[in-house]
Length: 238
Image (cartoon, rainbow, N blue to C red; front, side, top):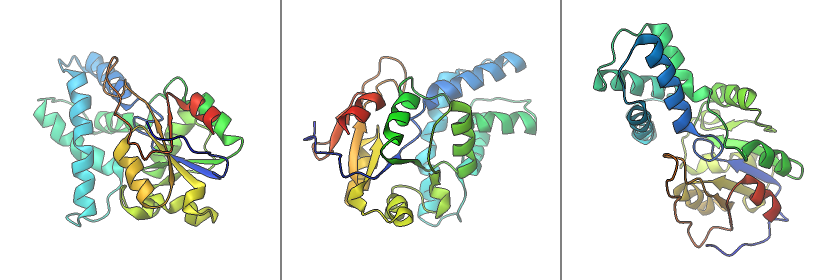
């Protein structure tokens, strides 16, 4: 566990979203099961969700390395979905049904502590997602889940996916904050280490259930500034 340094100088806070603020896995499984009942599909939706998430980083890497031009996450998810439908031998879906399933990522539920914790942190800090999700996805998610963002920052804003440094410097640049006056919050250590390399402060929040109930959270790196069990605890440590 990292030494917990004061957060009193933090002006802005940016949050990873998938897995940190919202439970992507349960949401995708729920949407799949609803579709399966409607269409009488025999699919392991838990495996389907995990495979879909597994295509997330490779699809963005093709954008990062220039293999394909800028493509937002909705479009990347849709291309991955087409691959999954073949892999899981799912047939008979209309384009409307495919689009609806693809937008399951817009309809994810927050973790139980997310909204309360964000509201507490919003009182003294500018708060925003800092996600690879596109802006419409993040806004739709926030409106449905009641996420009280002050602003919505996305990789789409500058056409650069995390962990490219430009994404982490979005809030400092837009709000005239020093990097060290901005804190990145995530349940993923690699995200935090990339933010720290850009000069941001970091907070790790444990999400052991990201890949299913009873899972294990990542082990936080010793260089992380604050470690918390959830958003409410993080708000107190700030």
